[in-house]
Length: 254
Image (cartoon, rainbow, N blue to C red; front, top):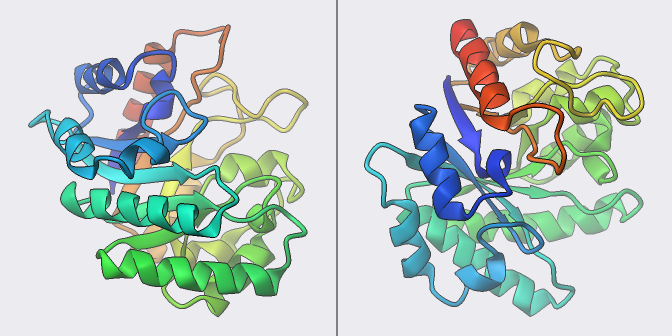
């Protein structure tokens, strides 16, 4: 397993500054957030000039883009597919193997989501990219059973495990071992169960990093563990210190 850093850890800096900080923290792999409402790279920008962004992301010889987290904000199906395909092409140019997206909101309907994701999986596969849906509160995957059902019904689909959402969301910290056979990517921070504890200082929460890594190893997982401590305004701690602390902790466990 390899420890990576998400650009969301440094959302209050420019993309170039965020990448430079990640290099300074001695990460060799970066998980790039491509969010339309995010602070850095946006899907609507990628679709206009894929090569430009590929050159930027591949600029540092010591830092390799290794995953993309994608949030496209358009209700137009054709625009969505154009932006999605452009990001898949960007992934191919950057040798990125996995692209994570959120599943549709809870209540969207399992059958409709299966149809939607089957199409996206095929588009990603055409560019040599694995499509993964995040385990996230407020989406169809907020409960483990539904996440597994999606993967079973959509050949080639995988999961991006974010255990914080299974700790504080509707799953309420119950066992979620059934998802591990389908996990292709992982996002990590520390979290508690109480109100306002989705993200806490590393070591003050209840995320069982060792157990998660052991479960992944049982299923021959050999890919990324991404540090994704969200760079929220007025955070009561130094982001670089927290990111470095979780990096060292994960590296000590793999």
